[in-house]
Image (cartoon, rainbow, N blue to C red):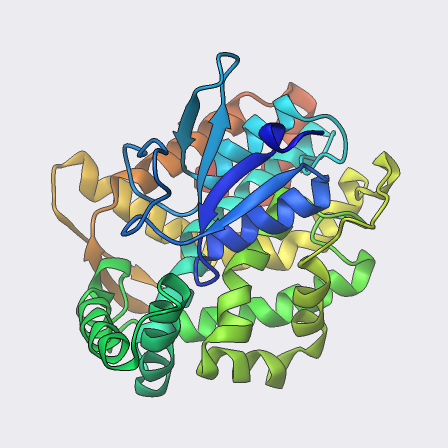
Length: 344
C-alpha cells in the first residue's frame, strides 16, 4: 500500500484519545502516519476541523482532498465500515451494547479522573506542565518552555471546575478511580480483556485514559501500582496488539458477559449515570450549571451539551436492540443503577 493511502492523524502523547486511537489502528493493522503536534501549530495545508480536538484524523476522499474529522467514537465506527477485519465491535447485539456503554463511561467519566489527577495535586501539576509543553514543542528553549508551561498549568488548574473537580468532589473522583482499578483487575483476570479474549473499542477507550493515569500522572500512577500490577502491565500490552490473531469465539458468550461485567455496570451506575441524568436535567431547563449528588457527595459543574447527546445515544442504542437482547440487557442493568438508560 502506497504512502498516499496511509491514514493520517494529528495528536499528542498527553491526549488519552490520541493514545486510544493510535493503539486501535495498530491492532486493526490499518496503515497510518502519526503526526505529533497540536492545533497551535497544525500541519501546513491540512484542513482545520470545526472543533479543534485531538486526535484529528485526515480522511482522503476519492478526489484526493482531505477531510478533517474528530471524536474518537464515531471515527472508530467509520473505520469499521471502511476497513475489513479485526473488528473492535462485538458481533453479538447484546455485547455491542455493553461495549458502547463502557466505552462511553471511559471517554466521558474516566477522563474526569485524568484531568483531575493531572492538575489537582501540586506534584502532578509540576509534572504535567513541562511534559505537555515539550510534547507540543520539543525544540523550545528552556526559558520559553518554562514560562509557557507555567502559564498553561495555571490556566488548566483554574479550569478544573469544568470537569467537576474541586475540594468537595475530589474524594468522589479518587474513590471511583480506585474502585475501577480493582474491578478492571478482576475482569482482566478472566480472559484478558473487558469483553473476552480479544479487545473491543471499550478496551481502547479505557486504555487511552489509563495511559495518562497509570503512567504520566505521579499520584494516580502510584495508586495503580499499589492496587493492580495486572492493570499496569495490561497498559503496556495494549499499546501494540498487532500480533494478536482474534477469532469470533474470543468474545464472551452473552451469559458470561453479564456475570463478568456486573461489578463494572454497578460502578457506572454509581457515578456516571447520576452525572448523565443531572447534566441532562439541567440542560433541559436551560441552566448553565448542574447540581446533583454522586456517591453521597454534592457534584457541581457546567452543563455539557455533548454529554446530553451521550445519554440520548445510549438510550437510542438500547431502543434499537432486538427484543430478546433488549430483555437480556434490561435484566443485566437492573439493580446496577443503570436502569434509567433503558428509558426514553
